[in-house]
Length: 270
Image (cartoon, rainbow, N blue to C red):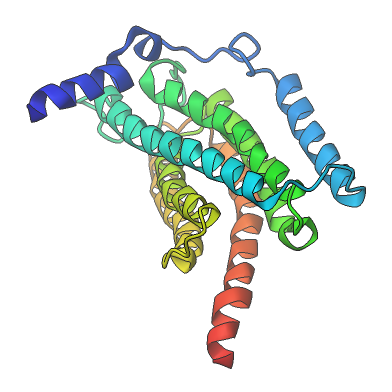
């Protein structure tokens, strides 16, 4: 029974022809052109800043907003769970037996953006546009001025760019960032869903702790990737990784600042 279930999951998440035969081609795969990415991010920033400065959107009734937030959160919670599991299975399936560090260091000279690992990288990239709805829900709430922070907007604008470079470069070890981020988002959107339904989950602080931990963990693994890069024939996408690492530093600093303001400072006062 368990074996049959695993084979079914593996087929639908790894072996299905649409997944196993997927190939990323910049400018040909849907939403893969630099023009699409730049237009989407520019539109997000422009509309967010405009609607924040001029709140022309109506404030939704609390019950309607809670229902919309709960529905949005459960979709992203389940999608994040699927992506975390699917990418893990895909990496295990696609890693060559004679190159167990493949997922950490794509060979710089011969990388085909093909197969289930890259398919789930593509799905993850597309999911970042779905997360723009997070901002819309804030703009439709009565607490938009308090909840719409620089951290929120910067994070939502930068992450799609980073995920695009994962595939376009392609960036070695992007699967590590994908799995860790998706796993954290399972916890985060589960919290948002519960909060929207009027509950007060105990793991609110754990969400921020995990967000900080994931960045530290990925930086640590990046050290291993750089070791392989400089001691071997080279890893793919190291320059793009450097740009992403720089962008991520600000996100990490903002999360640490948020943590200090909301937890460490309050604990000290207590």
